[in-house]
Image (tube, rainbow, N blue to C red; front, side, top):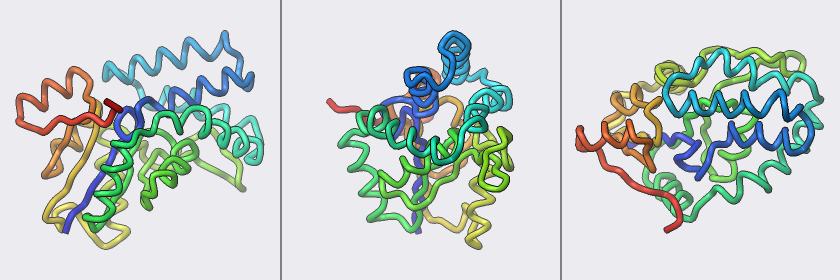
Length: 222
């Protein structure tokens, strides 16, 4: 029995949906460029460097969701999908996902980016399971807080175990467990699965993969 897990940003996507959602809000005039753009970039640089404080970032990133109706947010997200996400989906990424869906018992995206941003992206790929940071909602409205453990670094392991337990499974039930990621932030989960794969990896992960004999692949259009 085979489990396949995919990171999303800079792995299945040739870019970062979290960062691009912030840029979309700026370009659309939904948030103030002067106040928002520098912080959005700073948090993204911290993520790439492995120094991100996830709780500080989520306080920043989830706040715009609290200031608009769900109907407005859904309209904007549809535009975001067309303008920002579709161009970041490569043929190579779709082919890899389709092979996993054919071969594996379970396939999931596991991402630190919140589920409001990422659920429609998972649907575009045809992946039925999404483990993402969950923004808290009360009466259908976002509160700006997080529900449960953020799906980030070691939190991905926590969230994966919770998800599997909900299906009366655990990781060692699978003969093979695969995780595809680009990021040093995913080293905890990459080291846990039986088959880690570095995808268009950052320098730290690339070096780690070489040292440990992990396969490295690219999903970018050649």
